[in-house]
Length: 433
Image (cartoon, rainbow, N blue to C red; front, side, top):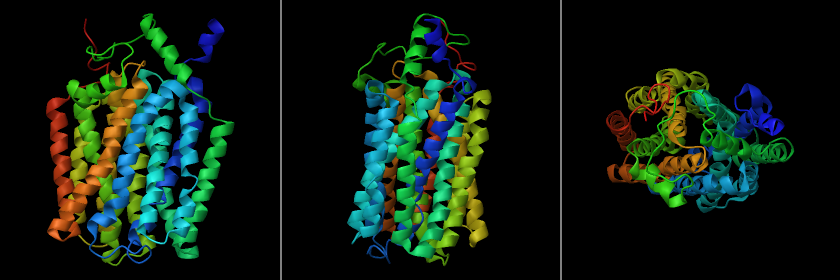
């Protein structure tokens, strides 16, 4: 028994090899989504036949991606508690296999929408598993750092892909460049998963046994009391969505912050393209958003382990709101890069911290499901945000209205967290019997 327990020690240092493998995986996951975020929206009109001013059609592929990814996040958490984390990760990479060829052969925008449906399956299964697996391996005091590193690696991959695909599109043409990039990413990720990644579900089971036996140290988390030890999917869903004020506030913030990402994904490249920036220039501006977001999470996640979750979340929501508004009040590549950096830093403050807050108060027995349902609401924000942004822009007849709508939504959502959510970090707000 002693040897068995030693195999499931928790902490980054004790599990460094697998922790690094999971970081590589999420970097590859970021590369996969990043190949859709520069070239595809910028050339929607000229390459894929989307009529100018068709805001709802332009947003269709992000809408499809968001709803599919949200559903896959929901399923991934529960599946991973039954099948294991590694099998779900591998299924995610299998789903991505046709994507590069759909882009290469696409006769119209409908094929791009179909490709993003598969991308949603891929992202929902793979990104959820990289995050859940790392949380299985680490300790409570490392959750902010863990998620910060996870999101750094993923969004660094998004930024790298935006720049590299812009260059490949210029060198080989948009379709061939994206196909070559996509095949390399999916093949590499699938092989690494098969050969080196271990299933981390036993670490989660070991933590649950330790807590049940009272063998854990440190302050007790404020776990919800109105849920069973082994809850049903519906119990966890309702808890995350409305029965627990903290979880509900976190979930709505996750949903609304995706409005910014939907905006940056589609409207921002189109806005820049219409203002005369080249594909390479768009790649760099959008890349600044991803790089600042990714790099800053090396520090912001760890910072939330010290100061708590609530303050960084609220500050990040309001900083993103300001960054979106800044895009519209200036001109030029340098100014837009600055606005992108403000948005990126705001996302770095809130993004890992929201996930860490869920992990703080989700019991190990159902943490995978809680993370999956939070991610369901968060990534459904892509779909809801894309629909709302497309509708607002269509009604106003301008992309600019979508920017102002997003800025306002982020400010209001941050205020809801300020009012409705208590601090979740167990050291700063421990449970009291």
